[in-house]
Image (tube, rainbow, N blue to C red; front, side, top):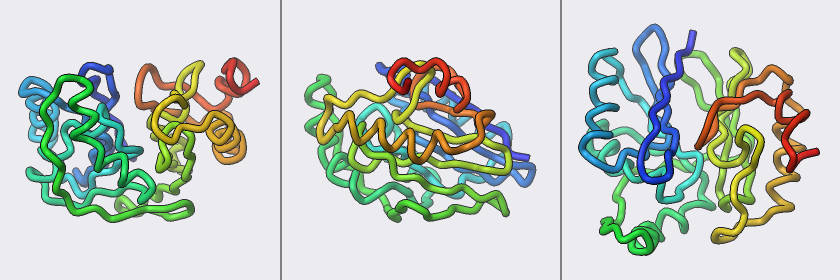
Length: 212
């Protein structure tokens, strides 16, 4: 049985997640910790639960989702999974930081690209990958069908969708991707978003004003 622990980090109230199982094997998703206090919070949880971080997953590479990426890679020395179309977004991290008045060094991590239709395996629990661009060019969703939940990043929120006015954003592309790839899943599929509260596919089909 998989457990999901969320943390709310940084200036954007970004959701960082840890998925782990009874074997204490775990994935760290979208490490957004940006200061010592936030880093300590996530480090303490991992230590107290005796978790073994086996992968770092990125839903996309916008600054608020990767502020703790270098720390995480240096500490756990495990591969970083992301879509290749967001490599250029990650490469713009320094420039993005300057816009927020932050000094950020270029990240140096071991990246293993994932793509549409790939599956990742956490001790037999399969996660299918959907490429849903529009918020960023390489936005992906990680979906576990067994327990019916997804980590959606900034693709889909409770009552909203990801911004499409950022670099290579595309409103029509995002709407089409959500409807064709996510809305065909079971209505009771839980959605753990990059910001805000969890929701469900059924709720968003019925109430999300962008997807009526």
